Amino acid sequence: MKKVLILLLFLLPASLILLSCGGYSAPSSGGGSGIKYRAFITNNVSAGTGLAGVYVVDAANDVRGGVSPISAGNTPGMMVLTPNRTLTLVFSGNGTQFSDNQFSIINNATEAAIGHVTLPGVTESFVVSPDGSAAYIAVPTAPVIGQSPGVIDVISLGTGTKTAEISCPPINPNPPDPPPPPVCVTKDQGDQGFNPPYHFLAIGNTGNRVLAFSQGSDSVANAIAVITPSSVGTANPVVTFVPGFDHPVWAFFNSDDSTAYVVNCGAECGGTQASVQTLDLRTNTAGTPVHVPAATVAVVNNSTMYLAGTPLPNPNPQPCTGEMTQATSCGLLTVFDLSKMEVTNTTPIIITDGYHNRMALGANGQLFIGARTCTEIVPPVPPPTGAEVRGCLSIYNTQSVPVGSIQPGAVTIPPTTGDVTGIQPVATRDVVYVVQGQNVQGGTLYVYDTKTDAVDAVEEQKLSNLIGDFVDVKTIDF
Image (cartoon, rainbow, N blue to C red; front, side, top):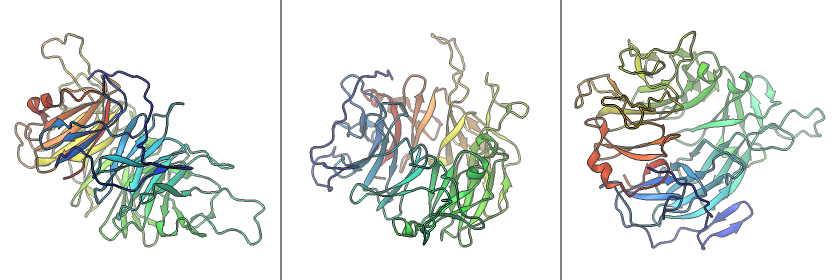
């Protein structure tokens, strides 16, 4: 879809009450598209008569809703749905000097923004407490007076205001008497003299622990900050650093939150070796890592974890063995049994290369894997007959039987180009929404049929009036 940039003035709903750090209004009734099964999709530019904002799509029929987009900043992108599905959280920011860094709260019932907070920088990760009362936002570039950058902002979703900011002060060579309570401690070393650039977050099923992962030097990036939310905002906040990891980026929690299964990025993020590693949250103890080829993103289905990543060239890129492609570098998908803590695929599963950061399991056992900055194969215009088209989306059949023409354990690379920025399976349908095309033609919403692992041309035509540069997609009512 054609991408057209124009200046957009962000308009807050008139009902917002302005506050020092943002605005908020209580949820109200009335308005809305009237669509029963909705998907929200973020558009970060104005195009034609359409404004940047959050668009409403009828996810049962694949048509755009007949309502104006919801205002959510100048360049809305990443979204997170609260567990009770009453609110959608949206971040707007592009890392430029014109970035508004706005965090918006949308009431799903009224399809209107009810609150906003201006963050101190760009975020790539925010999580919501299981009861939907608070959001934790990692802002790795946030300036901190007298310290290195990096904070976690805590936002009350009931009031739309920032209630706390988590950072780690350096060691004070002349502490007051009595000394203040420690904010960041490790099991063995006590107070820390650094402030980590928190980059990614994970939250447990009960909400009693938040894990923060940092990038930077090994001493910072190889430790996990274990945050106790109940202590945040008190005189003695508890943030315990647990060393012994290798550039962790994500974690999955068991049912009672006693154990977190940590995904270590390793070499791809500047470390040594990708792996899966346990973290005992009862004792804050790191387990023994189990090596995997590469991992920057993961998804869990029952006791099976799927991990995707791109091995670093050492000394040569990962070959695209078994694929008919012009690409000379590929990534790998790994199937991992959490109950046995072992890799189960005996042969390499080849996928696109790039930095993988989107993954979801759709109907019919089809695993959709998205990356950015992958090896693109873009044919000349007009394309020759049979020309290869290759972007950053891979689809893997997890089933033990064929699905359509896709054999068990096979991977298909659809002929669509660009970075993948959004993946959303549509419940009760054999459909997955994929937003792809950033850095090429502008983000497009594609409708994939999981029985064929191909774009459904009929359903795609229904969205022909959905024009913009789209980023993320979430279903609201399923």
